[in-house]
Image (cartoon, rainbow, N blue to C red):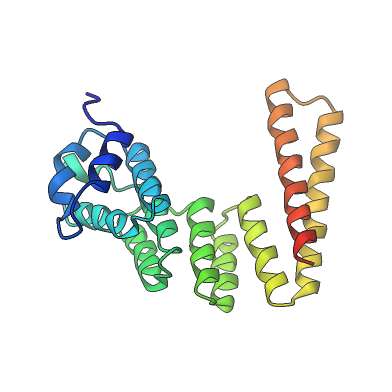
Length: 212
């Protein structure tokens, strides 16, 4: 059961002496978590500035062969592990993790690609961001607003105004399509979701305007 929550594990790890291996301390407790809870724990460790602990925990799991642990290695935990690389600017690790995901037969999704693009930006690898984006499109993965925001940030940062404007036009087009769908009376639950999307698009535009 729920003997250990994400909060209690976070507290336990935060309280460990620096020299102590956190996997040895909390390893068995991880078996009680599902992958989304583990991803949340890794994310919270990163937020608390305990990036090394987050890496330590995931690397412990990567070495395991027993099913009690291997079920925790999935799209959620790998994507989080890649996202955690941005704070410590570990680009090579992020690329290795993505290759390892593929080797394990885990399909990368839009969140995985967006996380990798963010790591590339943190490491000033401008060309690589665009390569990752191209690969994402080639694999039939639809970009989301995080992806677009990342690209717009990159284009503005590097003075590629034409590219930024092209992307904004594309977003404006999508916003118009959503508005048209709303007028056509899409399902109520869809309406809420689509209204959110329009709101997100506006957030991207505001974000860009601030950087101009």
